[in-house]
Image (cartoon, rainbow over all chains, first blue to last red; front, top):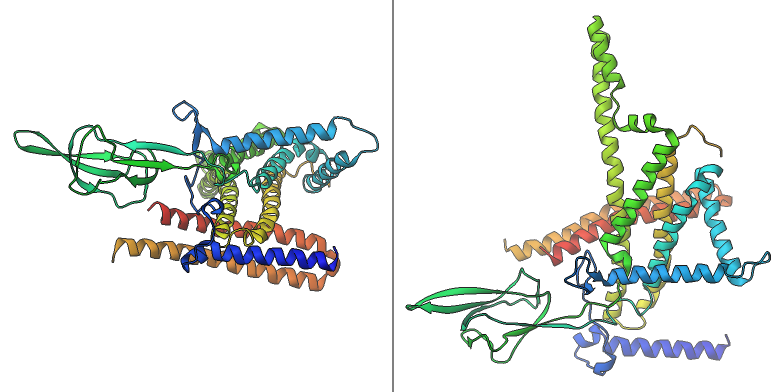
Length: 386
Length: 76
């Protein structure tokens, strides 16, 4: 780029930075309200922390959440990408085919360098699928389509069933479905006795009271008291849903155990968890009359049994740490970018986008790589061929 | 003490104490990497790859603390 071009880009970036500084949360805090409403950036808000928000079929058996939509998009994109790369395969590859071949070959070399030639070929499909899925999830989530920019607006009115007097109003801005008590209404049941009825939030979201509703005002069932507004994003990164990462971790752990089972045979595999051979030997020695040897062997046997249990626990903890590592990294990245965009829009998120590109790749590498390492440990060292 | 104050104390302390361990770990990783690079500059590629992997694993521990403190701040 020429010197003048560089200067022009720098000027634009500087202008955007200053406008963002004045128009973002920092500027608003200092009392400058510069940006028109249409250009306002979405305020930092996390809806459901652990899972996506239901968007379609909310009352069905399987509600379609925004994170599910994101993972379907990932599947479609990866499929189309692979299809486009392999549609017209040539001996001398074109650009796209060359790129895909290079990436897959690098992955295969990495896997073979860890697990050996034979096992590496066997592990490749699962590990590569995990790697590609996690990485595309992370990279697609950086698109502006994702996140709170595009949302579904849902409204619901809060109503009372019987006329009465409002004796309590919540001071919360955000309410939880079926948990937060928004109003307490005192109503007469006759004979001068009264009863206090709790009005519970019909859905989660922000609450806006209607005009004239305050403590002591008379309400009846014909008029709504308040309105709850919720704006869940239409698409949200699939890895910010604990269900997705847990499912992926379950697949990885099942794959590891299956490889251990088929690679070492049932007897060796199960003896890792239920190690009772030494215990039985000790008991047998007892009955033969060798008290000291029997005691020693029994103590070792008991320790072996406990170690087997610990082994089982440690294999199951892997699943949780897999799931939370990916979930935590992706959620933290999303919150980081949202906070940066909230403080100084447009310019400040840029370096974090770069960081997220790196983190998406590394997390995919860690998820795939750890599965690979655990699987090659599970297969055992009997048939190593480095 | 005021329950609200205790909540914010818990959030801050979870974040800060929870990040202490990963911070020490990252420092150790950096120290070991620089030492290894000084001893064997030719192995730069392999050392850096392993460093980034271990650094990301260490960082994940800090992120567990972050999750806990966010949950404490939002839910409790």
